[in-house]
Length: 112
Length: 376
Image (tube, rainbow over all chains, first blue to last red; front, side):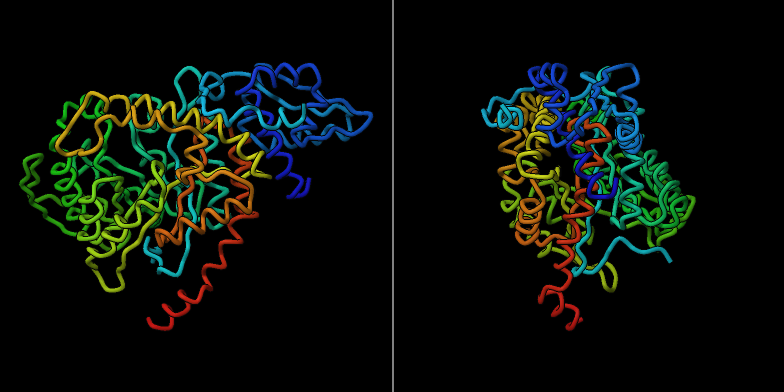
């Protein structure tokens, strides 16, 4: 990835992560249709390839190293499987809903 | 000689400001500090001005970092030019000899890159845990900071204070920076704190998170009006710390930042709740702080300007508005709020450095700055 591609990738990855931690609905849709949901966040998987979402013991560790996350995603160009680690816990407060009515999964709403 | 912490008023600086809000059992302190080392290295390589770290205890609000000097020592070893700032040390909880010697040691280890931000502390449960009265916090703060500065500047220091006694003491090591590291004072809402910071010739750290930043302008002006230089070329200097998230678009930025801001507000409120049934003569206006914070949402925080969240154009516009309102010398960007992960924080900082910060450099060539240079 060149610098702009890397910025786009990390920003999109951040959207996936935070949406996962703040919306159960998003998480469920991501599991059902990773390719489609990732596209709504700006992560497009090429035709003929697949997207794999991993929520495993090592997932939180991947998030501590953005360079590793970039490398892992780039491997998709040779393996045909684009991998993203998306732990559902223990990151920010899913329960913290500040009911101002303005934050309601805007990206997902826009895509649906 | 080491660069001092006081650049001229024509120089707009951008640094990093850290305040952990991870919760034990849910977030990893190991991962958090690994992330901060990475972000600090990025800031250093990009020419950012400061990395600043807070001191807090016991609860999620800052509790992962009871020792900013310990943290900054680790950053000193992996960086070469970024300045290392406490933000803030809480002198009320330390003996001044410990403050003077520990800070001078960090100054030596880092080759004179240290700035010392100090604050009175304001969380009631921290005072309670240390067995200290909040009502004496201002006196305790004033005595400790004054003694720390004397210990940097003088040898064979003798001080008699209601809070400590020093007799013929010379602190080691001696600071690398002449006269000791620059001292900055955090002021939030007490007018007296702004005026005192000016009278003592110290830098000013503001955190305009609650209320519109522009409302703080008269207080910042009172600091400038009361400023008394302590050496030739000295001048008022003001840095602001604010949560920042830069996204690809306004919508994407809000989608990422709002849950993080919600976490940050929740953790802060939980600590500030200790003010709901506390009052102190030294903290006018603090009682009920937890309840007041409950009126804030992520949306209100970013709408009021207490946090800057948006795409590149929006962020540039908002930074310029705040800078013009407060005539700041720089910003220290809080990019670790919300117990954020390293991927998200890195995305934020990379976008800021690549697309926001270059557009702010044009301030250096504004007519006002040119006139100032010509007159000096």
